Image (cartoon, rainbow, N blue to C red):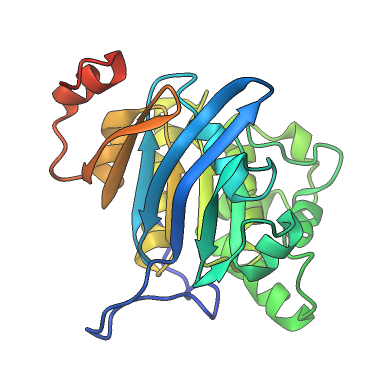
Length: 258
């Protein structure tokens, strides 16, 4: 993995001064409904700056719905979201991006008919600093050399792994304080999975805060400073990644946490 200059948002909180640093993200009693169905049912979670925090759980647990609510793509039924000390509960998605939240969605969703370079530049749409954007393009190439070889290539012609690299790099182009990643290894070959997960560790090493939903719970726990386990729209357990027993996680998935 290449080592590059830091790519974090200039307002990112690192917490390395020895003083107590407030959470970067605080979620209180967050609820999201689809009609009469309560997909997320009053969860609380905290993301400390400079950490990797994971949400794990079986399909239908409410993980993706939670991430979409945090980035403003779904309205809340109830609850409050605070980011860097500001209440952003009703803030529009584009304003959350400007505040420092980037969302790398499930199944990548790159703009297939645009080139790799155009996708990356689009990630910086909220910025007007052309010189810094050019510098960040160079940093993305250092982080993902394959993208540098394919700058003029249409995104839709990339492999699945290369599209995931592009999706992550596009998110980083907004210079976020918080990178939200939804199932970044879904459908990838084992070698590419290792590369993507190594990238998550690399950007964290550079000071990025990451909120991760990952299908492989064991890998998520290995990567994470803190893990929240979701079941049927609720947080049923939480602990540091080092303290959670992967075998016991199965009982939480099945609802046998008692």
